[in-house]
Amino acid sequence: MEQLTVHAPSQTYDILIGRNIIEKLGNELFERHIAEPERPVAILTSPRIGGFYYDAVRLSLEKSGVLEVGRFNIPDGEDHKNLQQFDKALNWLSRFAANPSRTPLVITLGGGVVGDLGGFVAHTFKRGVPFLQVTTTLLGAVDCSVGGKVAANLPAGKNLVGAFHQPSLVLADMDCLNTLPDAEVKSGMAEVIKYGAILDKDLFEFLEANIDKLMDLDDEALAPVVRRCCELKALVVKQDEYDKKGVRISLNFGHTVGHAIENVCKYSLSHGECVSIGMVAAARLSHKLGFCHSSVPTRLQSLLEAAGLPVECCARNLETDQVLEVMKTDKKWIRGKNRFVLLTNLGAWKEAEGIDENTIEDIVYEVVEG
Image (cartoon, rainbow, N blue to C red; front, side, top):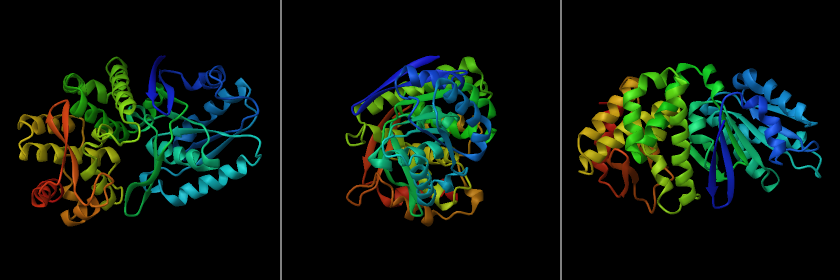
């Protein structure tokens, strides 16, 4: 088991990466004084992930001395990361942890949807209770579980209501990845590729050379990649926890167009698939504006395709105007100006705002309808 430490200004916490971690969870929490016998533990999970791992988590906690463990299911799928499920989870938690003298510990057991929504529940219940992320997906391990962004979606767009609430601990059990459908492995790999594209050229080149092994979840190739992605995100969070200093915005590479496509297609494409398309659009925009060489979008697109990810959604019958309209609700827009994370090279980025709208429309048309 490897340990990384996130030094966020508001809270320092560890990320544990390894195998068979779930079986050791209870002892780990007691040793770290996160859990105690009288503290109720509320596990927010999904029907599918809970079916695989809830009993093992519960048993580990009970063996270590936790007296009360409960489960709430958030339905699978990004379309369920909404305020209706948020309300249901909060009301369940208020009944489960009704004793006002005992502050519950919330554990999110699952991927990005459970982690984001469950973390938001933990942030708001009694003005904030501790929580930890037990991530079971590649997307969660390298991205969603680290950094403290918690949120719910609105019909108008993704993550439009949310907060910052750092976890007390993050556990990434690599054994859990073996139960992932291929589509979820691909979705997570999009975020892995993002880290190489914006922050680490050496990582990008390692991905190019080892993409087949990574897609097969080869442990020798994948474990150092997961660790490196966590290291990169931890460095970004340390510098810009609350996304106010122009550093953390880098993690949104590909997400401006990607989130809009996700919304317009009503989540029929996964988050990673939409981010993949969004990264292609952003890289092409970077080259069109003269920020990078033509080899940058070409290599990025080739790597995404090698990972089995889409680079356009032209067969989905989406309309460019719809995507552009949703993009206007993007949280990165400031003072009515568009704002994009673009590439100057592989492993290097810059922020650009106020880009000519016709140029943006041309690029979006290429990946949506072209």
